[in-house]
Image (cartoon, rainbow, N blue to C red; front, side, top):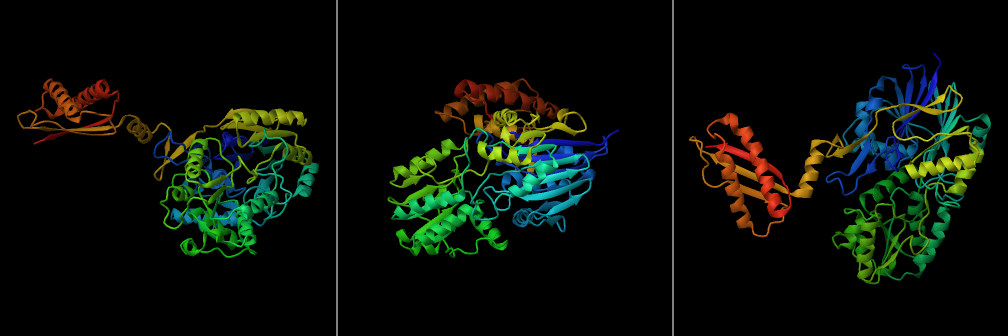
Amino acid sequence: MKEELLFCPLGGSGEIGMNMNLFAYGKPNKQKWIMVDIGVTFADDSIPGIDLIYPDPGFIIDKKDDLLGIILTHAHEDHIGAIAHIWPQIKCDIYSTPFTAVLIREKFKEKKIDIGKSLKIVDLNGTVDLSPFKIEFITLTHSILEPNGLRIETPAGSILHTGDWKCDPNPLIGDKIDSKRLKEIGDKGVLAMICDSTNVFSVGRSGSELDVRKSLLKIMSRLNNRIIVTSFASNVARMESIFYCAEKTDRHIALVGRSMHRIFKAAKQCGYLKDIIDPIDSRDAKKIPRRKIVYLCTGSQGEPMGAMMRISNNIHPDVFIEKGDSVIFSSKIIPGNEKKLYKLHNQLVREGIEVISEENDFVHVSGHPNREDLKDMYNWVKPKSIIPVHGEHRHMIEHINFAKEMQVPYPVQVENGDIVKIFPGKKPEVFDKAPSGRLYMDGNIGVEEDSKSIKERKNLSNNGYMEVTILVTKKGTIHNNPIISFRGIPIIEEEDFVYGLGNEIRDTSKSFSLNNTKQYQNLIDALKITCRKYSKEKTGKKPFTNINIIQI
């Protein structure tokens, strides 16, 4: 049987976030595998108690003995966020460039996991030989330091996995996109390009960090009082721009928020942010006149515990904001975050604070390719096939249409779990399906979507909680009244509700022999039905109910 070259996304295809991609080469059932990226996405308010979601890695865990390594394109959470949760189940080598490696080590340190020598640092534009794969890291531009595309060379031919990228002519930090090398790769032939689809609907170009810096300087030069800038902490070029603008406007700068300090420290450690002013401690910044201070803080998406939200609610211990100050949201409003962000904007404006965002000024550019950027990449690489990833279904279908306009012979539409045979065959096509899904980080345990803990918490969130304790004598009679407690049930007359429910409980209990402990479970089940039914009639809610029977 012939060797096969396969591609399989377990996450990030049909959604934006939690990217996890697999490549395989070899004879059927004897393939060697590599994983590219291992990310998370963030849960919304519909799943109480859950913050992080990541792809179910079960398919590759079953093949862990043939998994040669994890290759990381860059350090955004949707590409590395799941690594400390999944790695202990596969324990293979991890390959990344230096900045990403610093953040990876921190993740394992927080989880108290020793990765020893398993983390391999790759030089910028370096190569990794994991036979039958030879992987070349190619410098691209994005909204974080050290973004890489990957040329994955195999005996069947080469694949280009773009990771996240854009064409930024002036990225400020890091090298420009290596178009010369991409053209050379295209000239040698590319069987398939796995490509970012995030901005496929956006015309023109995604813009440059230098242009944002110029605009921010113009904005900050006209502001007279305290300035708070909130941005994605991972965007080190934007961070450097705020430092630059602070210096040019004769202001001190203070960093606020754990992520901001973490990224600043990691960038410094890797030799970036050399020519900037020193930040001051946010506690010392309270002594600085309003017109002389800039705060750069986390929470640009209105996160409840982000620094920006705490500042606006006047509960931050070090940063105070008042009428006449200004807040610059130097970030994109991510779809799904509009409601909480507009609430935050309204709260600030109502208190006489000027809010500057992408809606009313030029304060942000995307880190993903618009259509003109995509055209450049297609013209450089000239792939025989294109497989869109990193997008919702609407993005990827539009990307397929775009690829056809660019006269790519074989565009392939995929979703999570699809196994694409890139070689052999006349053209790449989906030929099989791998089990795929998502796991929810519940505390420090990964659980499935329909897990008991999540179902129970949703029930609690929607319907409230009731607990009933019955004391049973040796003679099999109920001692005194049932002890009833509840939370989250909309009760107006509590005394009447408890009195009526007590009667229902006693009536139900009479039909059971209480001096027979074998009947207790049947009684518990019957009482749960009775309590939920009574509550539904009186309040419209069927609470999560717990029954205790105590023999005295």
